[in-house]
Image 1 (cartoon, rainbow, N blue to C red):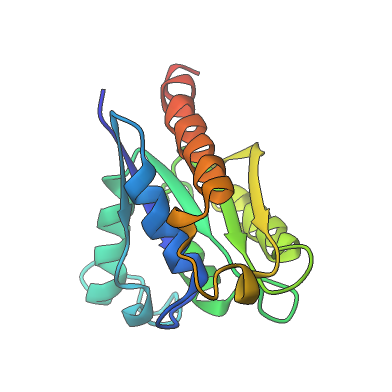
Image 2: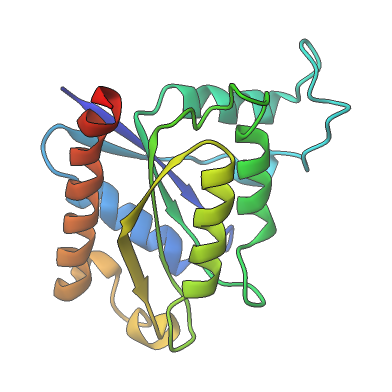
Length: 187
């Protein structure tokens, strides 16, 4: 069974280390798993229930929902902005949580990982992201975690895929997430 894992990256910055982690995860995905990085988060307008009406949903939000519906699982990469997740990531979660009771996360497995400059690697932001995704209907896999501290120095001259320790950890994350898809479907 081929498993499609949609990667949502909470940083829009060119050269983002979380984006680089997502690229590495896609490159290191095991056979039978495909990690697809969602490219349109910057275009999704802030969630507004007034525009979330059949026939009026903004195109960028509809595209995000369609990509999420086509996914079997999610791998969310969250940097830490002022002690929490970035607004672009929270906004994506808000759009994917609707319509209420039938959101695109729909009980699908979700793992949240990331990197940040601080000494804890963005743990607070990742914990907040797990909470929001779980409330939005995702099946958060709580024991799949990876928080890489010191991103500015660690990845200053090395792409995460070329860091043997990080590459090994990412391979394990994607492999474990891939393995949960059948378990969640069977449950």
